[in-house]
Amino acid sequence: MKVVTSVLNGFRSFVVQLPRLHKILLLLAALILSGALVSPSSSAPERIRKSIELPLSLSDAEAAQALPAPEVLVAAGQDAEPEHEQSYIVRKGDTLSKIFEVFRIPQATMYKLLEADLDVLALDTIRPGHRLEFDFNDKQLLTRFTFKSGLTYKVVFSREKVGSFEVKEHIAKGQWRREVFAGEVHGSFHLSAKKAGTTLAEAYSITTLLKERVKFRRDARAGDKFQVVVSRQYVKDQPTGNSKVEGFRYQGKTRTLSAFLFNESYYDEKGRSLEKAFQRIPLKKRYRISSSFNPRRRHPITKKIRPHNGTDFPLRIGTPVLSAGDGVVSRVIRHRYAGLYIEIKHGYKYRTRYLHLSKALVRKGQKVSRGQRIALSGNSGRSTGPHLHYEFHINNRPVNPMTAKIPVVKTIASSKKGAFRQQVARQSKLMQQLQAEQAVARVAENDAP
Image (cartoon, rainbow, N blue to C red):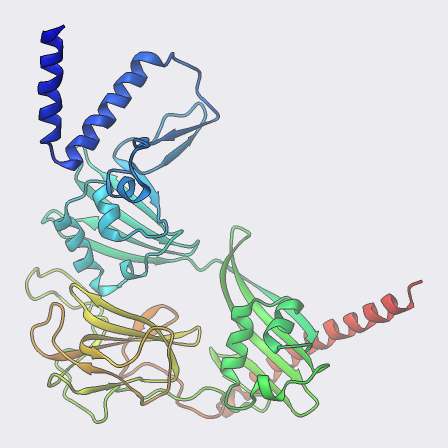
């Protein structure tokens, strides 16, 4: 008995000296071994959860910092996913570094992914609900990493022989379905539009588009009528959450107005543009371009084809950077390679990015106007010298901001006015039909006993 006690005391002293992580692993191994010895074999349950239960003595925070195994669910009667193919659904509080630690992926590999992501900057958008997929080889080396956001967007990182990663962006087109809604204002316009069938995002896009012509909070009156034509995206009959307002008409007691989407720009019923033009250069004056937009640029070091999705302007640190157009700041992020950068959304279609900044003068969620100072240029991140890297995206695709067709015209070209009138007539007919149907339904409801 003394010998056993001496051995136990010696083992206890050895465990006390171990690092915290080793203690947790040792306890997990003991729990798993005891379960294997005690638990009888049983038939497969309806769903098999492949996970490791942490000891109850640990707090939730400690358990999260330990080694929470990624959850893998498989159907009954099937084998669990092979170790070289695993997936993870991002949860609240997760960061990329924490997730990679769970999968025992070296930090150096994560940095290589971030370096490849410099052309896309998708990994900065990770949030709860996004799906991450990992492919490992027999040596548990990450060979492929996939980031999925919703049903239509994914980015695939594939390991190359030299150890770096190649990145490819995939955007599914899906199917667009047109829907028509009509209603009356009772209370706020946004809630009235939502009651009629639109989403709040669609209602806000309407008020943002028409903010220069009408102040809905001030001018809307109870009983004002409106009709909306919306296109919504579906993938295999599942809504993706992406939509765009194609037509809108408001018949109010104080004013009447309309908006129609034509050739990816909005116009009123007479064909006058409702969108403000962008400025091509986000600076007070024109500066020399040191590196132009080039989707087929050959990297000067690796000699591989790596796209240059923006335009570079060599600037002194501290030069004011301006917003290229009206919009809302969607990101203010400090990136290992892109440095401090800002992204602005200009409606559903346009985005601009400003990289390698020294100071941000705006915050996420802030509304900005064309020509407003948003930052000071710098040399942050991986940069060969002080400069501004400027990107312009149309429908999630980078384009050359110096030559791309961006909203600059105020009216529709004469050659396209006929097509525009036909489109307005079709959408107006849909609106009128729906409103007439609703009027008949209201009369029938009032006449009902």
